[in-house]
Length: 86
Image (cartoon, rainbow, N blue to C red):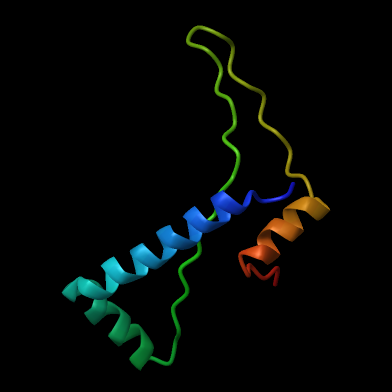
């Protein structure tokens, strides 16, 4: 699945806005400083994923899906957001 350029831009802009909002919040800033003082870095990760349809009211519940390995499209999408698979 190729990530639409507009979606990539919106998610990136949202990430920047969230980081800025967290940096401006005194409590969040203090927590980040405490974590960094312990020798750890912080990373904010956002994921844009297609929504799964939910059953209509009164319809039987959807059967749980078994976990599937990541497709090549999934891996490309995660790489575009600099998501590592370790």
